[in-house]
Image 1 (tube, rainbow, N blue to C red):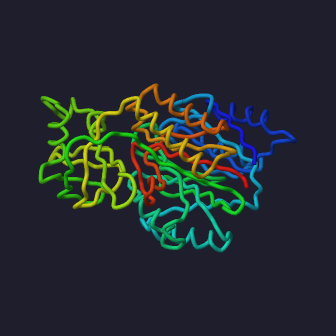
Image 2 (image 1 turned 90 degrees about the horizontal axis):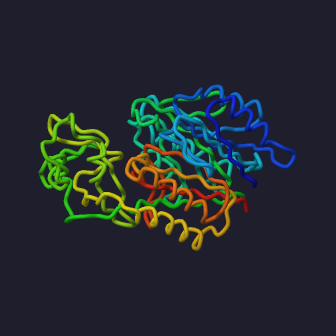
Image 3 (image 1 turned 30 degrees about the vertical axis):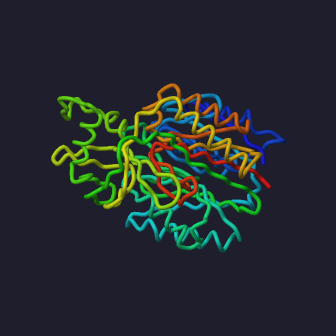
Amino acid sequence: MHAKTINGSSPSTIRIALEQTISEDFKPTLAIVFLSVKQDRDAVSRILTDAGIAIYGATSNGEFTGEGITAGEIAILLLDINPAYFTIVFEEFPDRNYRQVTQSIATKAGEKFAHPCFLIAGSNLNTDAEALLHGFEDILGINVNVNGGMAGDDFAFKEDFVFTNGRNTSNGIVVVILDEEKISMSGRATFGWKPVGTEKTVTKSEGNHVYTIDDVPVLDLIIKFGGYENVTPENFALEHSIALSMQLKRETGDPVMRPALLVDWDDHSIYCGGPVPQGAKMRFSLPPDFDVIEKVIRGCEDLKAEEIPEADALLVFNCAGRLLSLGPFISEEIEGIQNVWDVPIAGMFSSAELARATNGNLEMHGFTACTVVLKEK
């Protein structure tokens, strides 16, 4: 399998780049597309479809290739995989039947391939992404290999999309099912945020809505431990709550991050980027420093040493919160990841990351860099 990346600021620039990239020696069959909601998805889809290329697509909060990070543009990883080694499934869930949808996808995948693995992208901030993951586990077991992320919309947090050839939705999932007997896929989810303070208990929550921790309204704790003064809805920015995101303790594996996305000022509760079970043990996190980037790169070096020494292509689902927190330094993280394997790379800043926690279970992550490594056997 060979891989190449193209990027552009419009469908017309993508058309030109694609024409310049396709040759007798490189005829891509699969395109991994990350683009801004401002872009014409249908036009990009037609260009790729006319070239006979299958599409896995998601809108983003920013996109990148090895050429750098862009905002409001288009980034594409092109792969020349044998079409017999993969298939694409596109489903919507208007009835919020998330788990049943992925159960069905997993069942069909098991009928097609003896050992399937899955690259997924979902849309809609209200989607229960962990239910999607549990659906795969229900059919194929807890060791099923799933990686991906949730779409974005340039930080508007209103409406995002996933798409494939001729279809797109703001409430659905696109999946590349790979034959793992032919294509290796390994993922590593790393966040690097350091915990601070004592362990606390979530005393009241419903789904991703967290009311109290140790019987104190969550926002009051964030204000106290953050040292914020004279806080009002007008002067309290998203970055303030991001700076003290929660780390949820798990029975096995590393903790998972739950960044705050929205404050309810009526009761000082918060909505998090992922479910927070009542009774869960948690700690707050320190604001990130450069060591966060180094930990992500070391995680990739460990993945290379332990699981997949060679690669054909890399995908990265990097949390939009990391971009807000790390700013321009995030480029060093992406470059460092690519340098571990020195192959083409593409990715997006996602609304959530879907991957197996280090030494743990499949999880919906926040503030995490999920690196996905692909290699034809």
